[in-house]
Image (cartoon, rainbow, N blue to C red; front, side):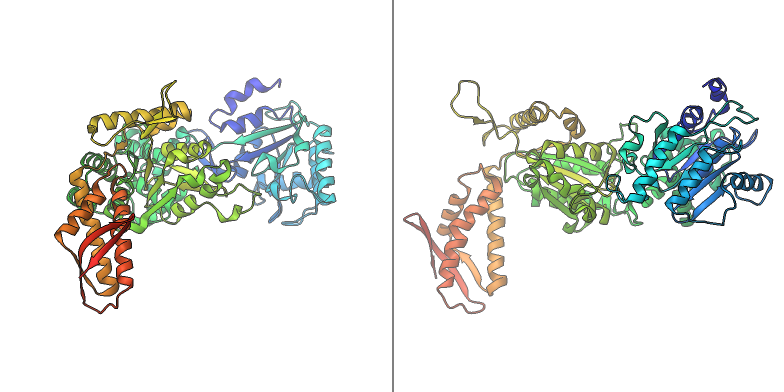
Amino acid sequence: MADSPTLSGRLTGWPPFVRELDATLSVHSQYVLSGNLHDSFLAPADGVGGTARLLPLRDLLWESLRTSGFSCMIVYDPVDGVQVLPEAGDEIGDAAQQAAESLLGKLKKNEKPSLEGLTKHLAAVARPAEKVRAAIVIDSASRIARTPTEMEPAERDFFRFCAKLSRSALPVRVDGPRPKPLYNPVLWLVERPGDLPPWLTKDNETIREITIPRPHLGDRQETARLLARAFGVTDAESDPAAAAACDAFAEQADGLTLQAMIEVTRLAKERGVDLADLPDAVRTYKLGVLDNPWSRGHLRRRVLEGEKRVPERVIGQPQAVTKTLDILKRAVLGLSGAQATRSGSRPRGVLFFAGPTGTGKTELAKAITQLVFGDESAYLRFDMSEFSGEGSGDRLIGAPPGYVGHEAGGELTNAVREDPFRVILFDEIEKGHPRILDKFLQILEDGRLTDGRGNTVHFSESILIFTSNLGMFVPALPGADGGRVQNIHPGMAYEDVEARIKGAVADHFTTVLNRPELLNRFGDNIVVFDFIGAEAADRIFDLQFANICRRVADEHRLVLTVRGDAMSTLRSWCTSELAKGGRGIGMALESHFVNPLARALFDRDLAPDERITVTALRREGGIVHVDLA
């Protein structure tokens, strides 16, 4: 490490992992590089006064090695065979070819050696017979062995040799910018560090493992300024509007590689998109679709109309409907999470519906879907009671590699990848396993999730709705009889219902689940539903009764009517207990009217267009009967 003080100035501006590799060439003979291998990387200008460059990994490694006096970089690729960088064709390339041949002998173009032949190449580079500085890159090293733990004899012998070679490699001293001894390194490029045999690197100080990270915001900002040249902007710093557009591009590209930013720029040029509109090109690149329902001009009008239509569908919940539509308006305007530094990739809207059962939570989710996307098929529901087991999260995002069903992917990630413009309902969220709930942290914060196959799915155009019945009952006080007591009651003021339910939700996430960070992601988007009142119950009853009459007419071409006294009796039976909400009214209608009606109609010969009148409802021994005329 004697020459390390000169490195910091010489490699200023290079990626950190390159500086780490360069600074340790005197003590490590092999390196395992994993992570973001297939990206482009920022490198300093080649010459004084130039601009930074974007280089693929192979070129980046060679450029950094060249500054340390390396003559060539030999690359082994299972597809393309053996290649030498730089390629022949000029003075430097021809010298590189001669240096490689002085180590390996005469090379055939794209030669694909066996493992035995590759062993000889590795030995020739790591223990050179001549004073030649060279590096050898083993690309796609994850594919050499069938599995790291179950290898064929030839594969096992190959890696045993490499382990021994790492300790017997000889450093090379040459004249030039770094005259001190440096190893001719073997650079393994793997998808994951575990793709190589674990015993190869364990307790082996001569092999260094380096993870190449995805680009951070500063890298993306610098890349955006380089790519702005494609739009005729040569100096973004001197143009405030261009600088702001570049920063917006970099922020929207959160989670993307620099190579992906290059592809986004190509996509934007192809579609005639200006620099200021690059975030729209990023959305297209991420989602793979051109049509964006959120950008349709009529959506604002539809939401305004929804202020009249939604209350007609979700009855008796004026506060919940109003707050939901406010959050929806915020989503339409693209202002969800606008207070955050980075909000562009978060879901369009997040709602947490809480309150008594049967009060319209699921119905409001369907109404939003119809309102925004014009089609209830864009509504996707997950019953979280089915995900109470620790391993059941694999159904959502897919099983990890090596497990049964890995290739099938997850139900949630597959659906969102197929159509990212959705309303996704997670029903009774409190019943999901806590480890599954942790998956929602990444979705709510970053708007993306990586499935079991390693693919990233984006939720930036989705509306996420969580429902819960938390707060209906709470644990009894110490010394009281029974485990739980009712926390809210029909007839309570809405303000009291809201306060008690929000308190119960907060207590569940902070005390029971120990997930206060998840509660913070919901923020003030908790929408509390009230009990169904008497007036709302009458309206729900009329609506559901009309549905029954319509079904009878559609199925059997019968005209069904109920006389006044019978109707009053039925209404009182169905709306007397409101604790179960609208769903309870429907169940009562089915029990007290649909079942006895079906029994009576089943015993008659029905003629098309016949008029059937219910004259009375009677209870006999707990069974309801209808009298027909």
